Image 1 (cartoon, rainbow, N blue to C red):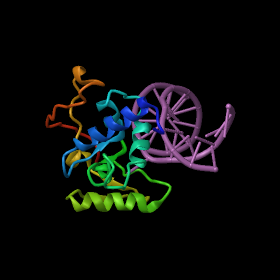
Image 2 (cartoon, chains in turn purple, brown, cyan; image 1 turned 30 degrees about the vertical axis):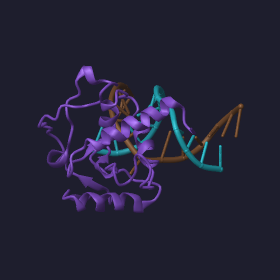
Image 3 (cartoon, rainbow, N blue to C red; image 1 turned 135 degrees about the vertical axis):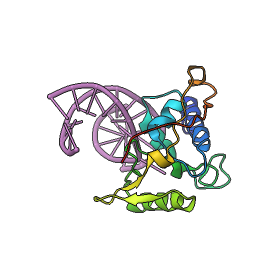
Length: 143
DNA sequence: AGGGTGACTCGTG
DNA sequence: ACACGAGCCACCC
C-alpha cells in the first residue's frame, strides 16, 4: 500500500461519511472531519476527495461517492488549481436539483439554509461508527 | 530526505 | 468586514 494503514483508514472513513450525504444536499469539509472523529483535519478531507479514484472498479470512486456534495464552510464550492473542477462540481450539484448561484467575484455558492446537511454528532459515534443522527437542522445563516 | 502545496477552519487583530 | 497565522498532513516534486 502506498499509504500507512492509518491514513488508509482515514480515507475509507471519509468516503463512507460522504456517501451518507443525502441526494440534493450539501455539507462542509469541516463537518465531514467531525463525523469521522478528526475535527481538526478538514484539510485532509479535501485531500481525500481530490484523490478519489475515477476508476469505477475502485472500491470508492467518482460514481459511488457523491464528492460534489462537499463544499467549504462559507457555502462556496472551493476554488481549485483548475477552474473547471469547481465548474463541474456545480454542474453535478445542479444535476441533482441544487441551485448554485454565482457571486460578484465568480464564486459558486450554495445556500446552506436550503441545502445544508449538518446532522448532530453523538459522542458515542466519534471515531467509531461514524453514523449520524439526521435531525432536521435549523441552521440559520447565510443570506 | 526535505520542503512546498493545498478540494479547510478557526482564532485574532 | 477583511487579512493573517497556526494547525493539519498526504502528495508531489
